[in-house]
Image (tube, rainbow, N blue to C red; front, side, top):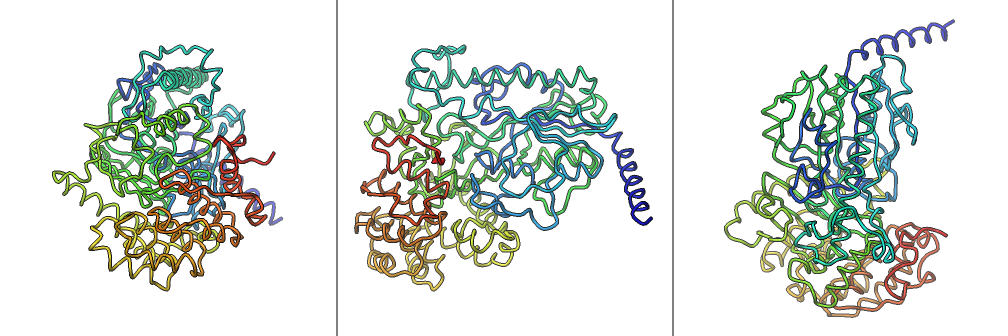
Length: 627
C-alpha cells in the first residue's frame, strides 16, 4: 500500500511539474562544429554568406562578442554542459585520460530542465570530459527530435552539425588537384599568418562551401519548427562549438580558436524575456559558461549556485549589466597527444595570451592537425625559409606573454607586450589573469599525471585543499615574466625545493629563459641525473637540451623506460618531439620496446609513437588507434 501511495504522490508531482512547464518557452541549440567569427560574412566582411542564420539574427539578436572558453570540442562542450571553468573542475584536457565526476551536488543543466518537466533531446554529439548526470536526456541519438515529447510539453533540443568539422578539410592531394570548389579560391581572404598559396586558397574556399552548406542545414531545422507551429514559441540559438578550422584556429588559444558566432532568434510569444528589440547587435561579452545558465533562466528554473556562468537572457537580467560585460577567459591544455598550457583574457579590445611553456611552439606536431594538407605545406615552407615573420611565428618559440589589439589587429600578428605605450594595459591584464588562475584555483599547475593519481576522484575538493600551493606554483611560473636578474633568486629556491612540483616549474622557467638561465646548468644536471621525480628529471634534461648544455637523450630514455604511467610517458614524449623537431635537433630512437606495456597502450602514447616511428614524419595511423 505504501508503494502505491508513493507512486500516486510521484504522479501528482510530475503532473504538477508538467502543468507548471506547459507555459514555458521551448529552447533549441543548433551548433556548427569548428567555426570562428572570421569565416562568416555576418561577423567578418571576408566570410561566407549565411542567409538562413542571418534571418535568425534579423528576428533576434546577434552577439558580436561570444566566446568558447576552450578551442577544442570536448573541453568546450563540457563547459557548455556544466557551466563551470574546465581547469577548476578537472575537465580541461581534450581526449580525456580520466572522466571526472561532476562537482558535488551539481548536475548537467538539461537534467534540471527534465526535473521541471521539459523534454530534453540531443542529436547527437556529446564528447563530455565529466561523467554524464543520469537523466540528462530523454533521448540522445541521431534520430533525437522534439517530436517525441508529450503534447504541450516544452522541450530543449540540441543538434550538432559536422559539415564544417575539421575532418571535412582532410582531403587528399588527388582531391585537391581534381575537385573544384563552389567558392572561387581567387576571391577568398588569406589570413596574414598563413602563406598565400593555391593550396591555402583552395582550403579556405572549401571551408566557405561547407559553411554555406551548414547554413542551409540549420535553415531546414528552423523550417521544421515552423511547420510544427513551434517557431514563435521557441528560442533558437545558433553558435559554433569553438573556433576553427583553418590552421592556427582549432586547438590554439587565439581569437581564431575562441571567438565564435552566436545568434539567438527571439520568439514572438516570449519576446519579453529578451531585453533588446529584434534585429539588435549586442556587444556585451558572453561565453560558454553562461549558456546553460541562460537556458535555465529562460525556462524559469533556478540556476545552481555551484556554476561559474551568469545568464544573459530571461527574467531578472538587466540589459545594461550584460552590455557592460567585457571579459572572456580562455584555456588550452592538452589536445590529444600535444601538451600545452596557455591561458587568455580578452578584455575590451585587448587580448592577453599567457604561454606558460613558451618553448612549446604552436606548430609542434599534433597528428590530427597535420592530416590537413595546408598544415603540412605551411611547415614545409617554414623549413625552406620561404615565409615572412608573421607566417613563421607559428613554428618559433612564443613570447611568454602576448598582447593584441584585436580591433586594429583582428588576426593577432602584432604583439604589443614589449611596447612601452601599452605597459599599463599589459600590467592590468597580467594582474587580472594571475588573480583568475589563482582564484579558480587552476588545477593545470600540476602535471596531468599527478592529477590523475591524486585529484580526479574529486577535482573541486582537491583544488580547494591545495589552493595555497597552486598560488605558489603560479608565482614560480610567473618568474618568467620579470627580468632574469629579478627571477634568479626565486628560480634557485624553486629548483632546490623539497616539493617536486616546485622543482618541475623551476625547470620550466629555466627553459623559458633559455640561455639567460645558463648559470643553473650544474643544478639542472644534478636534477636530471638524480631527482626522484621522473618529470622533474625530464624537464631538467629538456632545459639542458634546449640550450645545448648537455645531451638530453640518455636521461629522457631512462625516464621513459622507468615510467608506468601512460599519461606521464606522453608528457615525456612531448619533450622528445620538441627536442627532435625544434632547435637544436636531437634524433631519438624510440621503439615500442622502450616503454612499459601498459604505457604503450595509452591513446596519446600511441599517437606519439605513430609519429616518432614514421620514416617521413607522416604517421600512417595519425590517431594512434589500435588496428
